Amino acid sequence: MRSEAEVSQAIDTYADMVKQICILHLKNDADTEDIFQTVFLKYALRSAAFESAEHEKAWLIRVTLNACKDLLRSFFRSHTLPLEAAAELAAPETPFGNPVLEAVLRLPEKYRRVIYLHYYMGYSAPQIAQILGKNPNTVYTHLTRGREMLKEILGGDGDGT
Image (tube, rainbow, N blue to C red; front, side, top):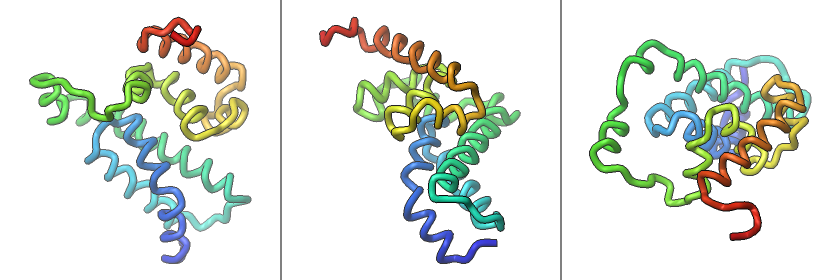
């Protein structure tokens, strides 16, 4: 079990990253807070040491992604409609005000993940492959297809227009 100081340091360092990943996948503040607490509770209870700061960061990303997937697969989640979604049906609006981020959020999950990790978190394709447990060529393919989908969504043809 980690000390309170270690957990506080990790929260200070990685809180924004964990919340961004949660928002990207869950699109819901309440669920984001739940997963945030879950991730750092698992971190606090983990007794094994990390090899490096990068290993620690990758571990937190993987745990966050898994927790998000678990929540999205849960019976309750798949058989209810969130309050936010009901409100959006009544009056749709853009929650983030950033058209590129809005477009990224509209991508299918497999493309959204790699685009986010590459462009927002700064990971290379081989690093993303290691984090997600995928073949690097698969990551390259998802990046290419994700960029193509973003061009369609944003209405650009790639020549600066």
